Image 1 (cartoon, one colour):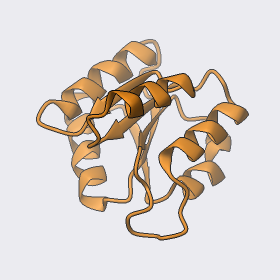
Image 2 (tube, one colour):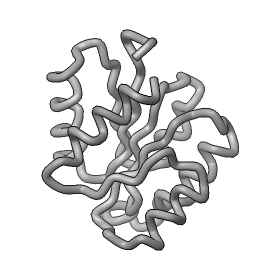
Image 3 (spheres, one colour):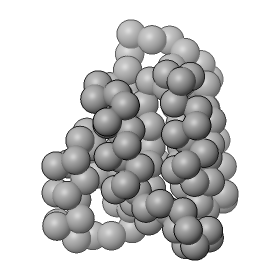
Image 4 (tube, one colour):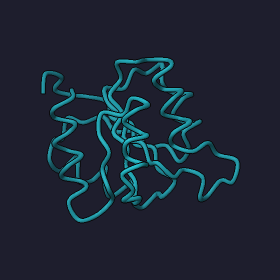
Length: 128
């Protein structure tokens, strides 16, 4: 990890999951600057802060009906900054869903579950 205090954006419409992931990451590296967003649109408004990595939920419109889904947000992030690492997070175990996110520029696809937080932490270390 070259950057000792990387900025990490977590985009998930489940506040409890965002908080648990933030806590887990801070426990393992207290230099992380973590910001959470309930919608992809809120994240896009803050992209000028140049995060080092974005953790993006695939299914973002369960709470706000008109919110864009993770694929649309991923496309927009990559349109604005091709080099920004985006880790997709989803409960979908579909190979097609995973390959679609990779095709649009995600560096990795993590399935929500027991080892997801550790996997995300390792991916952050590898990408910042």
